[in-house]
Length: 133
Image 1 (tube, rainbow, N blue to C red):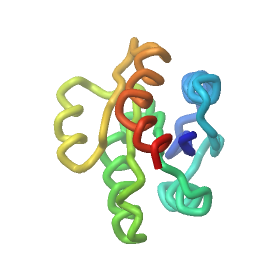
Image 2: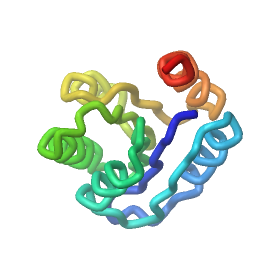
Image 3: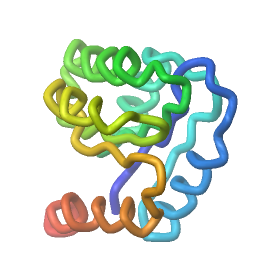
């Protein structure tokens, strides 16, 4: 079973999508820790480390995705926790996906992605290595 922190960084006050994704990941058999609204990158990284998370999923609708994802990737590196995989989604323009992946974001789900796509990606890329260890 994977431990996944789902977080809403920044000032964005809409978390329905994050809650839907958190529930889908939980229903897929993962342990999910949802941090709630208005989390700072520092709070998210602290939660991920404290909870021994395998992945951190960020929901960003505010337009600050480039800054927020980079800060979280940098903070994880500073805390020697770069093994925690960062993925996310929300309102992220297609042209920003490649630059985010270049800084270390594993996957970005753009608007319209289904919960099945998200849980399928997690299962395909992470579940086997966890269940065999």
